[in-house]
Figure 1 (cartoon, rainbow, N blue to C red):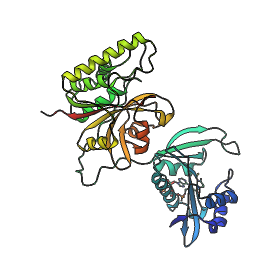
Figure 2 (figure 1 turned 60 degrees about the horizontal axis):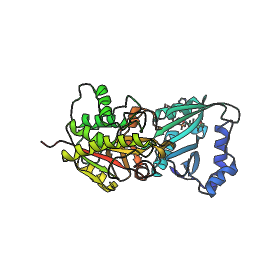
Figure 3 (figure 1 turned 135 degrees about the vertical axis):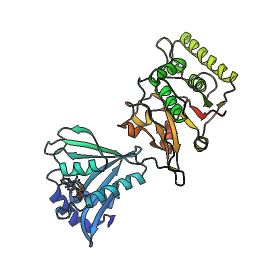
Figure 4 (figure 1 turned 120 degrees about the vertical axis):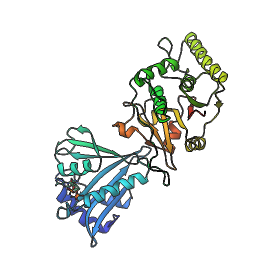
Amino acid sequence: MLCRADRSHLDALEAIEQASFSTDRISRRSFRRFIDQEIGDFQVALVDDQVVGYFIVLYRQATQLARLYSLAVAPQWRRQGIGSQLLEAAEDAADEQHCLFLRLEVKTDNFAAQEMYHKAGYYDMEIRPEYYEDDSDALVLQKLLPRYEEPAGQNDAQKLVPYRTQTTEFTCGPASLLMAMAFFDIPSADPEHEELEIWREATTIYMTSGHGGCGPHGLARAARRRGMDVTLHVSHDGPLLLDSVRNSEKKAVMARIQEADINALRAANVPICVGDYSLAQLIEDLQQGSLVVALISTYVFDESKAPHWVLICAADENYIYINDPDQDSLPWQSPAERQYLPIPLATFRRAFGFGKRKQKAALVLRRRQQ
Ligand SMILES: CC(C)(COP(=O)(O)OP(=O)(O)OC[C@H]1O[C@@H](n2cnc3c(N)ncnc32)[C@H](O)[C@@H]1OP(=O)(O)O)[C@@H](O)C(=O)NCCC(=O)NCCS
């Protein structure tokens, strides 16, 4: 049984700590402070009212990162599943706080603990040299907590949106479009080549100015050309993403290119909705079977201000799930983690939109109605 730690557990906690760690032990005073000040989540495992293990999870404000500060089981109670049970409870606690990741440090020679974490889905991130008081190194491990669960009642054969990693640092938009094409069964003879083709059709770059990636109007045109129905939502009328271009002549050329795209979209009756594309509308569009290619700022994730296109695949009451084509800019590691990556709604609200003017752009894509 697990319960919140209280002062009556202090003697047992101190004994477990003494028996479990040779260095960097948590003092009785620190244990008491965690309890009294209700810092983080601190739970103990009880067998017949006896404390046999504990965990402490700490949260850093305004991040989606939780830290497993400590976890230990009394020696005589090990290898009976209690450690795993505590770890699962720690993950549940962090998930409850809408944290995306649970991260921890462990001594590089602590193979028992590493085995437990690896088995539970943690992956190695880095070695921190001389991390502990005795100068030994720490291995940092991390796990992505929430995953996409198909809504109950839907048929099991529901198809997930396939994942694709962008092949260049500036083709996030085209890679997102290619994922949508694959989902809508629109074949591409040579996706790698087509990724570059779409970029050539939609890039806003001109003579080394511009952000390098694709503009919303050009991308919408490219999507339409490839057999998808598109509705474009933009926060501002006219050309976008030109704020950082200082040279006014270049800016004028770049604006003209986007205007040509806008005119072509109008001529093809592609709806261009100017205004705020709300979260409620986004969720409704997803429920209707659309996919949404949206421009986000990566600032809330890694404090670098890059405009970045991602494909939004699903939503529920807590998360927006994205396929993130980028393998570098965000702190998720494997392709499996960048498919249906959960972004808490509040985080998405902050990430959606780019630059000082919070320019927003989203392409709502549907299979073309015959
Ligand atoms: C690491 C620790 C918490 C594991 O607790 P536990 O209750 O024994 O863990 P479980 O019984 O749930 O074991 C889960 C899995 O971890 C692995 N594991 C645990 N102890 C192991 C050991 N001594 N050698 C190899 N693998 C081990 C096994 O894969 C095990 O699954 P299995 O028993 O089905 O083979 C416990 O050994 C401990 O308290 N160690 C000292 C403190 C510590 O290192 N804490 C973690 C660092 S923050």
